[in-house]
Amino acid sequence: MKGYLVLENGRVFTGKMLNDCMMAGGEVVFTTAMISYQDIITDPSYYGQIVVMTYPLVGNVGLVEKSYASKGAMLRGLVLREATDFPSHYEMETDLISFLNKSEIAVLTEVDTRALTRVIRNEGSMGGMITDSIENRNWLIEKAKNAKKELEGDLVQYVTRKNIMCFGRGELRVVMVDLGTKRGYIDLLVKRGCEVVAVPAQTTAWEILELNPKGILISDGPGDPQAIGYAVETCRSLLGKKPIFGIGLGHQVLALALGLRIKRLPYGHRGSNHPVKDLDNGRIYITTQNHGFCIDEASLVNPDIQVTLRSVNDGSIEGIRHQSLPVCSVQFDPEGFPGYSETGFFLDDFVGMLKK
Image 1 (cartoon, one colour):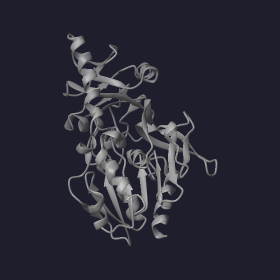
Image 2: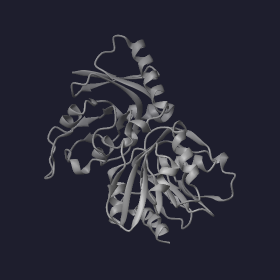
Image 3: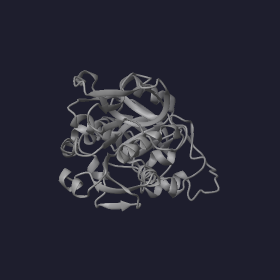
Image 4: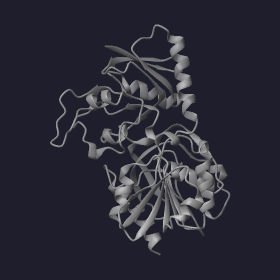
């Protein structure tokens, strides 16, 4: 069946609908990742977005639940050049289209994703609608604009956990403030000898301290950190009381808590091949990222806040460290998988901070 992606600027991209979900709206973004589509589809930080895959063939190895970043699909739509018809892998439990059908995620294929990506790079990420009809084009353009506006509020409330949960039995207790975390962070901390107590995003500083943690991790998640003032206030109240490590959205929340400002990037950083430079040793790390905001350079007036990492592509801030408080953060995903194991040592550094 013929399908379309209608952007808020009026551009229309034609393709083929691959499932029964006839309409979906969200912020249209692109990712340059060549692998790990399972991780992308189930990553809570992609909540509410229509993701354009720049790699031309997607779905080659199907899906297996143990590779999900969370409990299920998080994005609203997926735009592809081609979805493989014959996936194959010895661990495969289901194919891409069956999974997305079951998850009610719209899929549009046979799209000129190179041309679409160039539009987003030139004009910035924008609202869009996947639909099977463009008869009422003006109405669809308005729907596309509204779809993006709907994502300007608090998105964390839709992806954070509802209850406190404990993982592992290590000697070091870490409270993870769940802004939309991936399973990988919990697993990797448990492997490093930590007991992880994951708490909802709305948990207060007093409630966190009552859990008597050795340290606190502010997780990744979706959306604008300025829309979750409650998390910023919690983080601000915890400064100086326990070691804190922020990741992704948590990095931005920590920056706001320290008095810095956040600004929107034109089209964000999304992919698994973003080079980041470590200013301490000059090394370049290849990182996985998904964010549309970054620290505003002009707000760096506190001499106690040191920039530790920068994007090689655009020079934006990718990591900070406080000179007198046990506080640090990174903008990217410092997991040990998939494909970016060289940055897992940032979690080692955090655990080492707790042991001190």
